[in-house]
Length: 553
Image: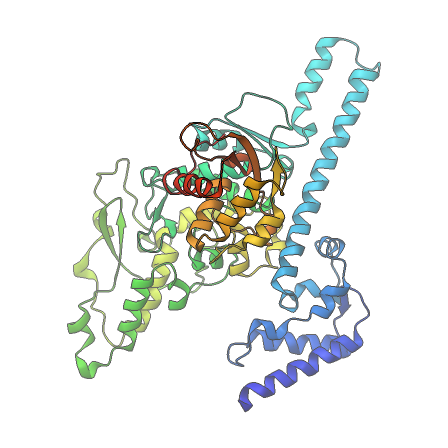
């Protein structure tokens, strides 16, 4: 208790000095009392685990409450001083909610700037072509409009067919200019309309749902989904070219940039790597590969009084993976000193042992002979088991998927400012990409966020609906959310940020009436006016249990 109490007292003292010396600005002195206290706090944060301090111990909400949450993070992007320090260079001082708010403010500012630049150019073009006399011939006007269509479009517009979602997305994102992808996203899904204002917002969510589902299909060959954890990871030796992984990364980047979540679940190691953090410990892989982590832990903790490591575990110094149903093993080599955890595109020739074999051309092809040579691999013993575990983690999360991850990481950074990513921790980035998997959904909060079409909140059927939902267990509440919005996850910021519309869909007809349906593109539940609560409960439950997503627009 005493060992933990002393660091807390020192941290409280440093915080008190900073509060007392603070001038009320985001840029603070790099020296003097404030700079010294800040440097001490930073050093303690780096050693927080050994000091038994949690992240919450470092929050200084006093700063966040008194700084402009919009202008401050935007000005930080261009801050450059050798004499002063910006508080956002020390993001651990701010709560997770504040950091997400700053991250989104940066994205919105960049998006708004791209929109305004295109809008301004569009106005100048119209002034020249429609109202000016500089260009009089119709042909020349049309040529000029075509030439300036890209720089003057206010939105990034994707026209996607429902049967070719990923193909259309790739075709239309390939070679897009940076100024285009920085604009607000508009999606025309299954529509031929060319109107830029067609997308209501929910269409975007539906587009990403369909695109991710196609990318995760085992037949596509880019990712695997663990049967137990349902987590996604890269397919080692994938036949898909690197440019497709880069465009998948761009799709993820567009979703985060536009404030949308994706129906995907990656292990914590994925987000650590995206943020440039090393993946070296067993607890880094425990969520994605729990059986493997448990097995490696048992290996490390094994007492040889109960038998030798060689006899009990019978392991060789190899990494094994499944490539399209074929087991592939490879002798592991020690990491080179400059190993970068796979966060850069490692295309240099570091020797064949550092590159994972790829099945050439067809799924039934045999791996190259050098990819599996058990006779060359030494046995795992009590002397090398620590190195074996470290190398196994490295091969699992880096070596076997290095080109795929590097390509996806490049795409992911296309829309996001590098400094803005330093605000995030792996769990925060995960919540921005995937949303928050709530154990339960607050029905009262969802009811406050709901909107109505064709009736109001006081209508008998609407009241019956909420009475039924309130009695649902957590599983059924998530099924309802997925049925209406195409996702059972809550966006960052809570249930209040969900688009949830209940639209009257006629009266009960025939024997108890037709089932409720949903337009997931618009977050809209189409609910008939049933004659009583019991009928509503029966029909709604039947729809949720047997019709995942039918009736989509």
